[in-house]
Image (cartoon, rainbow, N blue to C red; front, side, top):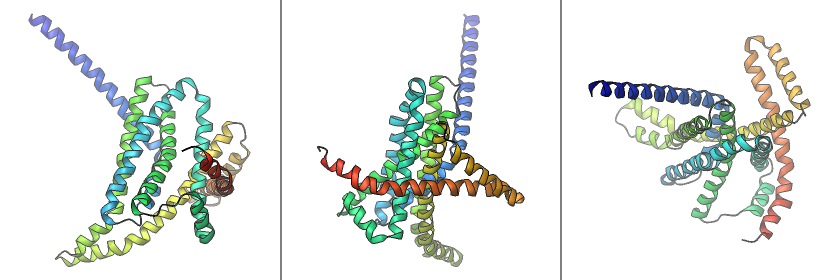
Length: 318
């Protein structure tokens, strides 16, 4: 009996080691996948706070929570199964779907720029799409818009993550993508929650009895409006940058690599011009070129959405 018990314990220890090794592998792959998707994660964090600006302080965290829940639902219930299914049965469909998502990001970003350049025309354009008058409807519209934008960014994150684990088993891919989805959602929306509540923290600090803390609190309160405005600009730029980049890579995959090569050559030339900061210069030029392409595509889509897509949606049965 004792020998049998020892053998059983040996088997349990062996299984535990295998499970631990598998867990380490999944965690390692998830970390690698998350690092590869870091650029899109930053874009996601920059885009989201603009959906909370303008609401009462007591609605900020509930709105962030709603968007985070929608983001997690996007990743785990829709994108994860879709990514696995497409990878297994229709890998050819991944690129065109990502390009459609990139076009949507370009449209969203260009519409924001349009609103700055021509506010009256942009107001008329926005009114022709959706008008949400009462606070509840406005909140619902903002949350819905944020979740739709998150869906595109999350799709890109999951696609990049999937590309880093091409040789893993089906279940390893599924678990790794789930870990990436949950981890990135917690990271992004945790950061967003801290950003949108920083002014409240500043007010509390400004009421402190200690002079240095009061000064820090006042500085935090005063700095948040320009910081949020800057973050909104970064978020808009991120939309057209990421969207343009997705379309560039998609075109290259279909054999239309002229634009990609031109952007690469321009980036390399910029790097050679400032060898001490070659990597930074190359990144800036590549991002700027992708952003310009995204802005042009988005600008072309604005009248298409207003004059074709939205009239068709209005005619469709409810």
